[in-house]
Amino acid sequence: MNHHALPPLGLALSSGLLVPWLLVRARWAQQVPRLALAVWAVSGAVFAGSAALLPAQLVLSGESSHRLSDRVLGLRPPSPAHLLDLTGREYVALSLALAVLALPAAGFVRELLRARRARLRHAGVLRLVGRYDPALRATVLDHARPAVYCLPGRSRRVVVSSGAVDTLTAPQLAAALAHERAHIAGRHHLLVAAAESFAAVFPRLPLARHGGTAVPLLLEMTADDRALRRCTRDALATALYALASGQAPREAFAAGGPSAALRMRRILTPYSAGHPVLRGLATIAAAALAVAPLIVACCSFPS
Image 1 (cartoon, helix red, strand yellow):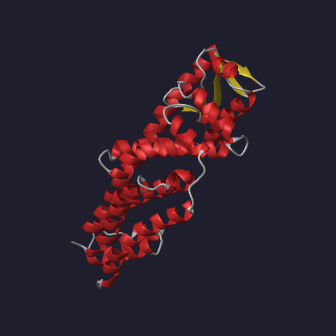
Image 2 (spheres, rainbow, N blue to C red):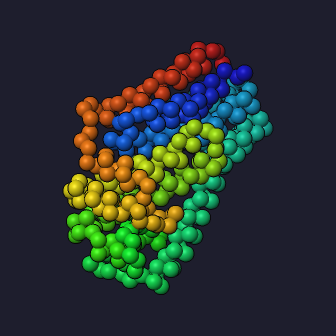
Image 3 (tube, one colour):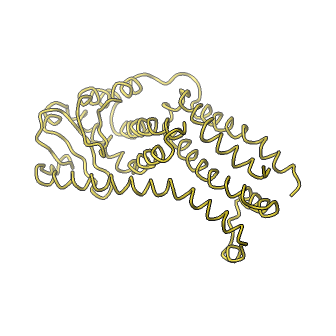
């Protein structure tokens, strides 16, 4: 096997198998959800890039493979002049790499369009049956069950049921609204679409399988943390309790839902001793060190 295929192989194994194994067992991930989301996102990008490089390296000759490794490790993309001077074998390698990258990219676009169409349909219904409340800056929907959710994207809006308005106190309702606006401001629907499309393209890959369930939960916790800048922990936790049974469309973010109990416990329980950010960085370093021997082995061979 071409020894220049070792680094992308190691990166694919590390990001696709090792990192998700570490993340699903890491307690720090729920303490610093934004860092955990960044690790999931970077792992997905690294796996996709490595999976694209691997067949290209296997096709290329030794000299061309060495040049590609130098460019990738040195973060030096080829210039247009270099692309025009590629040999036939190098064009085949480039085509293979682009074909591999096209799979998750096409899945991401397809998931975005599907979710956008569903949100537009729901927004059209809300315009007919809901009423906008300027004081809440939200659409009020007549429904007895307490529910608060948001539609992100171009049809962005926060929706509140009349049952939630009647049930929640003013601080609790403000906390729930702040949570939903955090989803909209953070464009969390893009990460959800990426996680769902990745899981559809690579259904048996641990990175995709675990990330498809971990990312939505971490996004809810991220929105909780942002809402806590404007409200108290008691207000947000009691709002989640009241909204736990509320329903929302699949393409929306709901303040309650199945994860409400776990998030309530997280909000009301102080963090354990230690430094979660440092533990997160240690996890990243452990994954990087696992790939280091393969990169050293690759560079130790002559071109």
